[in-house]
Image 1 (cartoon, rainbow, N blue to C red):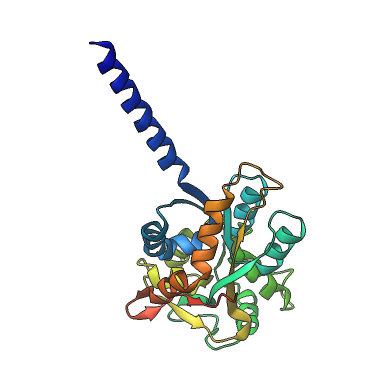
Image 2: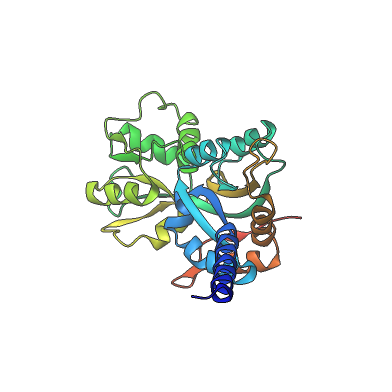
Length: 270
């Protein structure tokens, strides 16, 4: 091989490696909840963001508490979760400059169609008290997720918080597995509506309690602070935050439906 050809090949290889490195750089990590993944939202949303930006997004779906811990360690560029109190503390502690609301849906109490605890209605606190009183099976996420945090708030509103009944079990698992356990056990479970609508293994489970204003479920998005973690991909992470809270991303969120039913409702405010 002559010197000119070697030089040409070396230059071409160098260009290819630079292009490959550039492509690898065009990616971010989003720490999020199991509900955004198991509802199917991200499978619908992220290809649209990739088309608009060229940026790949790797989602690590955890309970909200675990997702926040991941972001605190600097292992994510963006945090997308649903526990407002914990999110505001994340910002107050300097791990993000601000929190932006992005969308909402609601929690629902799921249980067997026969409803042995007679929970059906629109009062989540009264319903959970009945579950405890009759020792009905209740599957708790028990994973410090946003759904688990909401469940604990509701228990505290009852006078049965210290005694949730002998049927109360913590699975330490995501929303989908918790629904699967409730399905096989004929038990009750608090779920976000999005995951429920995308859940296929329902057996005789139905929505029993909905419509209580306390079941409102808000999601927030935050860019992890580069001041805390210099490795954060600030520019690309900010592009994601701007897109998902902007007109294009909000329209995509509104367009995600299952069986004609909208799963999430965009409510970002600039």
